[in-house]
Length: 198
Image 1 (cartoon, rainbow, N blue to C red):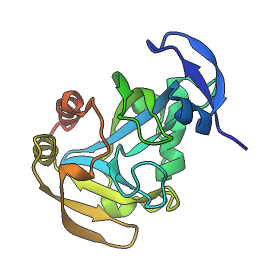
Image 2 (image 1 turned 30 degrees about the horizontal axis):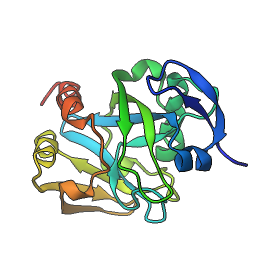
Image 3 (image 1 turned 90 degrees about the horizontal axis):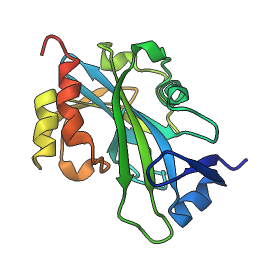
Image 4 (image 1 turned 180 degrees about the vertical axis):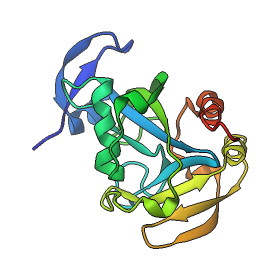
């Protein structure tokens, strides 16, 4: 079954119709996405996108992210956390961080224009406790310290910890591994504010 998305006006105020996901990206239509960042006292969790993904394979992305399908509201996007991470969150636990208009550099046959509804949630469970993430979508999780996120956004490499469902491994990640997110510079301090013991 094709995934149907609402086509939005450029300002995000009006729904202009419905189209399948492939056609939306082919034609560069504006549509909606949901991004959730899981914040711990010691940092922020990224997901490592599966290597087979059509867009940004193997890159570091928001902890959970996905399209809002036709008829869904931003509140419905919380399902992405359970689908990708295997953990249900209550909408009341999320902190809304705004809607960000993203117009990526086009690639041949693929144009991404999204209104990204960005949320965060504080969850201090250990990396090893994330055992039910969807291996078809998510290769693993990467914990980056709050100061490390600032370093990444300044173009520097930073130490991190990766969890692939079997072992936690130290590694160093660089800014070239991040899925571009125009809002991250502004959102990073807000994510840090959700860590009371920072």
